[in-house]
Image (cartoon, rainbow, N blue to C red; front, side):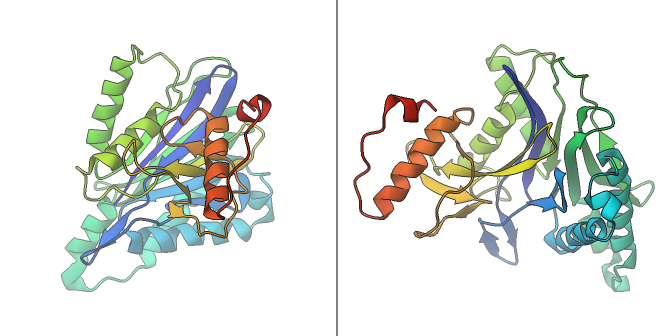
Length: 297
């Protein structure tokens, strides 16, 4: 299981789509807190995430990647993301239709499908807006169907958000509480509030299926996506660790990607400075004084 948010961020002159999830896979008496749950696709304008049973989700997501690679028109983005959404739905259902389950385990397999969901999000050049769909198993239709949250037109505030996972209800409650405490109404645009909810739910330790460092991807209107590293602390005053895709970086790895600080998710300059200082300390070198221009850039 997992917890994943996808939302349209509107802050000052910034308008982008953000997808964030935890990094825990669990089962068989084990927990694995460094597992990627958001996958890039062979086109730069969209990403695919999952929540649920890994045995179902990973093979299906990888076949979605292969299906896009197999079609130059889809891979080159000549097909809009709204057309890609149909392909994703078809491949997901095909994969699960082909899956052969022992008769005595049919009920268990049905429950696994119901517990597994996918989120596709990206930029539509046709409609000039971000699109986010959740693919959930329909008990009535006995197949995966997609649910969509419409975003407002360009220049208007958007509260488009999708949540996936076994603690979706709890996450939605925490999200609404945070907005209420911040004095925000349902018509006010989102900044990084969903990420803050994810962060706090991971740190709380109340949810056994949610854990590990958050992983974050942003999709932009210029039809490109960036995977972000996250400066993570297991508690607010704990040791800061640079992570990427939920995995702590090895000592020799450089941060050659954009970063956010989990405790100041809108302040990229702070994350960059923290990561640089941490990397230099790992090498046993005292970092030089940072100029005002560097620290504020």
